[in-house]
Length: 108
Image (cartoon, rainbow, N blue to C red; front, top):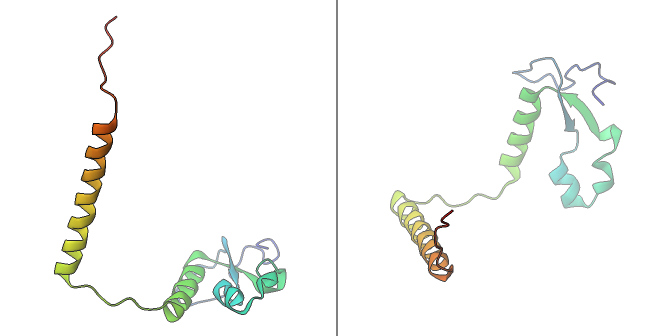
């Protein structure tokens, strides 16, 4: 794929680096999955050479437009969720330590 384009970016975005090192889907993979046209995922006609700057900016912008938005959490809610996860982690560590057999040091 890259050899076909002589390792030159075929997208030519605003921050284009020129040297292609990745492959971009002309029709984004998320659209292919949504429409059930997965046979185009590896189709050479749906692929083009792209530099990392162009490919990642295109994928990120498409993903940002199509991804459902999560409501923003307040700082208090985030802190409460983090504390709950932290507490659950340490409870599990303590549970596993209590369930483990007692280890005696080896004396040689």
